[in-house]
Amino acid sequence: MGCYRRAKLALDAVRGFTARIVPKVVAKEPISRAFSTESSTLASNKDKFSGFSWCSSLSQKSIPQLGFTRRTRYTSPFLDSAKRYYYVDRNSVHHFKPRGPRKWFQSPRNVFIVVLVGSGVFITVYFGNLETIPYTKRTHFVILSKALEKKMGESQFEQLKASFKGKILPAIHPDSVRVRLISKDIIEALQRGLRHEVGWTDLEYASDRFEPAHEGSGHDTLMALKDVGEEVKKWSREDEILDDEWIQKSRKTGQERGTKTATSHLDHLNWEVLVVDEPVVNAFCLPGGKIVVFTGLLKHFRSDAEIATIIGHEVGHAVARHSAEGITKNLWFAILQLILYQFVMPDVVNTMSNLFLKLPFSRRMEIEADHIGLLLVASAGYDPRVAPTVYEKLGKISGESALRDYLSTHPSGKKRAQLLAQAKIMEEALAIYRDVRAGRGVEGFL
Image (cartoon, rainbow, N blue to C red):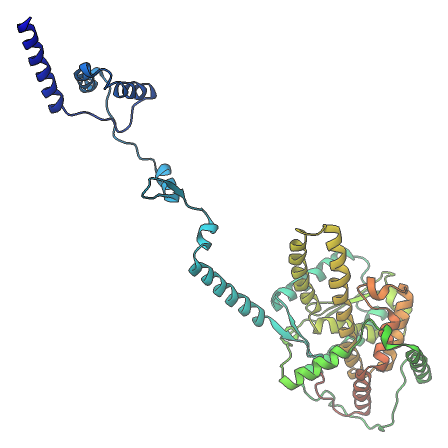
């Protein structure tokens, strides 16, 4: 028994010494889940089976001999990139960082850079696209370039010619000749008004009291103007929806500042006139100098002065770049509507934006074109006092209603006639008209 005990103590000592000398192989990444489970089980039971600790050590050393090869840790680029979004504090707690723009905007420096750059871009774009309209001196923001606007007008004009193929009157047709000659007078008056040059070189003798009559009779013109004047007396300022006071204020402000008007979009235009045989009472002037008149208009307005008034109004839209301004305004309206859609029903937003934004803006542009067109008519040698009767007649043809001044893109004909009959611009137009008919040179008036 004594020998057995001594032998056992010696064996235990050898085993303890061996366990301290043999290094333990720790797998960095198990080959399989089954092997990982087996290793963890052996490790957990190490204390329980302390007498067989050498076996576990030997088994770990013998694994490579059994055909299992230990692999180094596999580094995936996807896993490494994912570690960028969290950090570990001193308590070994993982804190995940926000991803995307939210992470970027958490820095006050980045926010300041964005605000600074964005403000600079906005100011540059806004003030770089501000223009002053001739005569009214109104400043408007137009994001559409002049070249693109001209190209769009020419493209639309070609489409109209294709769509009305077979209905376009030939150049030698009496209506085409007549409209073309009237348009030529308006365009020449526009060029004189913008260049600030003497317009009339072929002077002829005439009295200062010379009052030429347009087609019809001068008496009819005066009586028509008298009738309009009687209606003006019954008209109350309190009932007025549209007025032209903003034009006078804008002109005064522009003259005080010495603002230069934008007229480069009218340089080197290839003016074209098209008469379409359609019973539509309409006419328009596309960007790029493309005038379209329908024969339905000629059947209702037979005098040259009446036709000149309508063509002058349409050319006034081109002078003020109303098409480009309308596109810019619609862009802002669309952005505002998208924002309001988040809080209000879309139907309500659309109705309110049309009623309080789009339609008032359109009616104001019509009033502005009336004023510019009136000066063009007078400078072309046509009686400007016909204009109120033309707009009133046009309103009767299109159909007047009590809500037209609220629900239409155009003011009522009666309202337009009243504004022009009493406006200060009528005095200016009559002064230009008398000078032109008397043979005196007319300086730029736009």
